[in-house]
Amino acid sequence: MPTIHLNGKEREVTSHPDMPLLWVVREEFDFTGPKYGCGHGVCGGCVCEVDGAQVHLCKNTVADVQGKKVITIEGQEGPVADAVFEAWLQLDVAQC
Image (cartoon, rainbow, N blue to C red):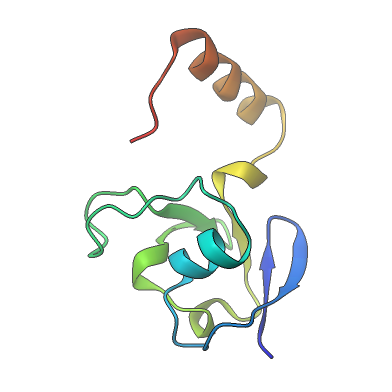
């Protein structure tokens, strides 16, 4: 069974390695921060961090991220992330 390093933990994936990572992150692991938007990597609703780079999860598969660290919005940590999250709450920012 393939595994992915997601939000700081190694996780076993039950989906096929060719499954788009967006669906695995949302359906198998219940991280709903990444959204389905266009399905073509244009809108940015599914963007996450993979080994420090911005990646569209709708265009990448489980196999594409083997051996890489995937971080969704739920996995962001530190003083900058905390400040951003607090500002979003204060301003009632909608997540598209």
